[in-house]
Length: 493
Image 1 (cartoon, helix red, strand yellow):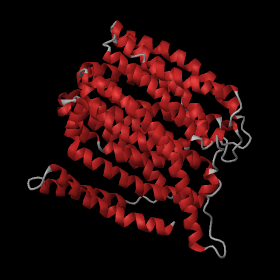
Image 2 (cartoon, rainbow, N blue to C red; image 1 turned 120 degrees about the vertical axis):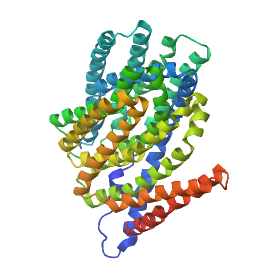
Image 3 (spheres, one colour; image 1 turned 60 degrees about the horizontal axis):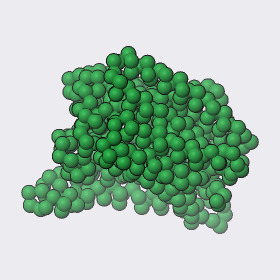
Image 4 (cartoon, one colour; image 1 turned 120 degrees about the horizontal axis):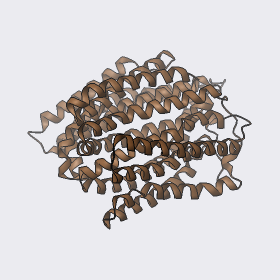
């Protein structure tokens, strides 16, 4: 394997020395963008290579009926409780720990994994008790526990992957996650095609977790470049670990509470209808928020804040407009062609979920901006402020779910998650703007105007042109903010 790249050095585009001028700054920026695109390429392959395989399994599962799909959705949401307790916020907490100049990376990782597996066993016992309290039947309880037993080890493996990201070894994560997802998805697809019992089908997560740890075990035992020293960053204290754990808990609850309440109030059929469009929305959000921001940019930010703050801010200011463009370019086709996409993926049963997809679309852009701002604030050491924002977001989500879901069902769940994501984005971006992030109301107004213009063009052209032609013409207004923002950014940097 090739040695890790020095992301911090690539990012450092310091003030021009005599004789260098703006060309040196521009060259440094493009060198960093090349580095960032390479690492994101690995994470893209890992995220969507594994996500695509899992998506095929989820589509087949959805086509077996909303009832079964809703049952597995609920089991995965409850399994996330085990994953949350197992992860305990370690993934983000370990990034500054691994960036410590003389950190014993192997010792830190093995100690963390030991804690996480003990937490996993405890959480499985608590989940079994929860299923008994809720009155789930034997089949429902067994499916929940089986899926949770596979999600726990996968959550623990994120500690190893955090080290890979700090070392710039996203390629290692890709080479592990894709075969693991392939094994789990093929297991689940085979079980569905053979009409196996649902409990056997639920073992797909266990198969995926086994492959992950079979790949990780040799690295932990032998010498590896993953454990090479990497100078950068600050050491995070024990109180920070608790704050990161609190952020992880709040993040899980406000993302999953509407699922729990929707199952309780409306049943697994409504949950299946809600989750079909959410798989699309969440998949896009995870691709950018998870793969690019949290797993590529955040490890770079963590080591860069104390080294070159000017470059740190340039990176974030460059990213915010790019994320706005990604949000509107991905949301527009989903708004106009959502029904056709759902029919193609999941079948005509889910056509009625097209409106739910539109209600969930604000989550995409909101997640992009929120995660960028949150990672920026965490890199600056503002863990306490981020924790209170997440705590406030959880409170907002509880209120929205309590008022909307009992009366509106799946519609209420969709509006609740969108409202929560927008509130979170406003709070984190607002705080980040006070700390130097350039995300002005004018930028948001330009993006919103472009989207409204695109929808107006599409609606006006539909009676006169084929749907595909009208949809393509609608992209023209979206090119306006791209033309206004991108050339000056590259010229400035």
